[in-house]
Image 1 (cartoon, rainbow, N blue to C red):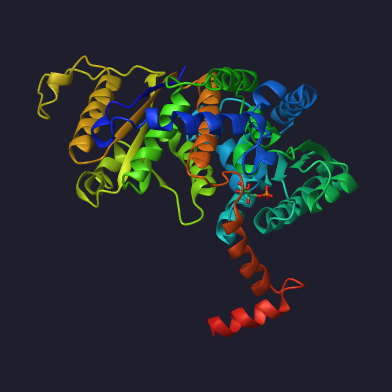
Image 2: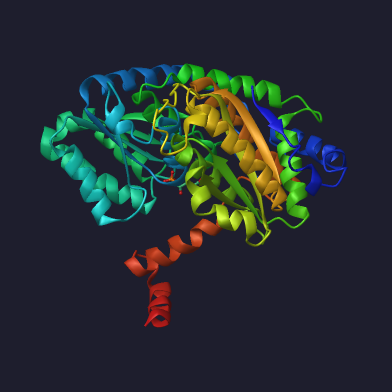
Amino acid sequence: MIQIDTSNARSFLPDNWLSSRLDALEDARQKLETGSGAGGSFTGWVHLPRDYDKEEFARIQAAAERIRANSQALVVIGIGGSYLGARAVVELLNSPNFNLTHKDGPAIYFAGNGLSSDAMAEVMDLVRDKDWSINVISKSGTTTEPAVAFRIFKNLLEEKYGKEEARRRIYATTDAHKGALKGLADAEGYEEFVVPDAIGGRYSVLTAVGLLPIACAGVDITALMEGAREAMEALAVPGAENPAWQYAAARNALYTGGKKVEILVGYEPSFRFFAEWWKQLYGESEGKQGKGLFPASVEFTADLHSMGQYIQQGERLMLETVVRFQSARTAITIPHDPDNVDGLNFLAGKDLSFVAEQAMRGTLLAHVDGGVPNLVLTLPGRCAKSVGWLIYFFEYACGLSGYLMDINPFDQPGVEAYKNNMYALLGKPGYEDKKAELEARLS
Ligand code: PA5
């Protein structure tokens, strides 16, 4: 399903960029397949597209149908891996304007992914007078941003419907056994979905974490899982032809050769949040021990008129990975204009997607000429099956890449630093000494 073209990176790579890494890739593949590498207890996502809980999957579909029938809005509360995947897929398979363009089912608002009062008040205003439901998602059940948002939105829902009906409109996705959210969900009797122990946040989009909001948006989650399963089977096959091996080897070789930034390039505005999901996946998986390509993203052609200058002529520290979907869903023909004042009649009768394709081809060569290697990933179309494939491809290649770099791709110890400071400054019990120390430094 996915095709990788490394030809526009070859002039930046040594001849043995792939062959010299085949043994290490085989070692990484075995670690992923058997869970025997660093962080191996978090490789539950590797066989998830085959082994997922079918009973829970049916409950997710039933809950989504209920929400689609009784809610004009769904507030999805979560942060990081507990929200980016859902938003990525909802937008990529629909539009960034999903809430304006969807024909049935609820509008979907994402909350609890920051601490902006204004952003939260806006969502509160948007849902207040509608019929609405909540999906609160937190694996740990203790993350501050979604916990605070849930308290606020739960109050709002209870004010509107009373405790009994509100309870039926709250869906909790959390750990199977522990955490504050689990305790609350049990006590209140919310319908619960599980974030499996063996799957970390950024690898969890194909669990209930992503699937419930995605299904509420009307996406065919069976096709999404089918695409991921096809990818799982294809990418488990070892060898130089494996596109995940090629992607992991190329970016590793370019990194070793001095590149420091990988820019994910999309040509669809609906791709923006998929790139945000990808940034978390690679940033949290690889950015540790002073190592890792910095994951960035751009949307072309819009950003060719802003970041394009830097990419063409700034510091030569980046590579680009372009994701392209072969077929557009719609055809728009450029009209003939008898006056031709804008001089565009040479394009009359051409499809807009033809113009986009030439822009992409021209940009690729310009950037290669400017010293930016390009890897190109091509998928047939923007459908649920392709997106399932793409998700799994990036997850698998990320696992391989982490092991090639000799790091644990499944932990995120650095995320705790800000949390501990914030807890101390907020006066959380147990952090008294740290609070005094931080306040002294800040005064
Ligand atoms: O990838 C990760 O582990 C993080 O981004 C988490 O998903 C994020 O911090 C949210 O955590 P939780 O689901 O426990 O609220």
